[in-house]
Length: 253
Ligand code: NAD
Image (tube, rainbow, N blue to C red; front, side):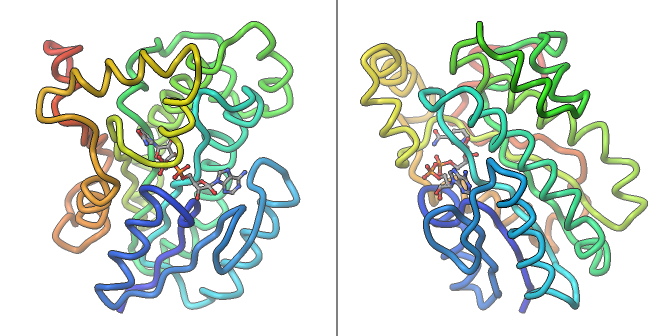
């Protein structure tokens, strides 16, 4: 039996992964704003403190893995998208690094295949990577939700890649999964949006290998990335998107 902690285990991809890990006999400590072992609003400093303290109490002997799955869609308020999708994910991972290192475990971040849709040198991406959350939140007024969503996932992916070497030395395998469009409460919110709904539906219809994914299809790959079978997978950005990224950026990898 392995011991995992995760955020965002209440619904969607996180709920599917939590269930798969539990079905395989593992213990999963779930942190979420709605339901779970630890209830915490990860958009706030107090919520992150509650989450970190709670996980540390429940997993004093170490973690085999931590999965940062909590996230908000492009239709959420931009400050919340930046706080939850980027800053909370990074802060939770950093705050649990020693527990994961105790067991030579894995930290798996949940990025998105939308991350390549924004450049590394975008001021929002750079601001995230500069690690000043308050300054970043204060700079968002002119940005739309799509840019902040894609930028938060771009920054998360770059942060992961930049930390691979140091974290490997600390006994932590760091990776990211980049899901494509998946049918969850998050996408339901986007489908219901008068501006983005049609764009999202067309994107779903353009997926080369079928249409939108079910959450379990993403969780299957995440569960593999957490497993001992994936022991040499380190620093990878694993696109699970039915071929959409290859369709949009065939010459880049
Ligand atoms: P979802 O809405 O079903 O799940 C998100 C989870 O995060 C929920 O359990 C929710 O309660 C939790 N959460 C939201 N705000 C929180 C907060 N402030 N504090 C604590 N928990 C909070 O959505 P999903 O589609 O399963 O998304 C899971 C992850 O996958 C997200 O990071 C999302 O960005 C990413 N992703 C989703 C898609 C997709 O098409 N669904 C595509 C690419 C990436």
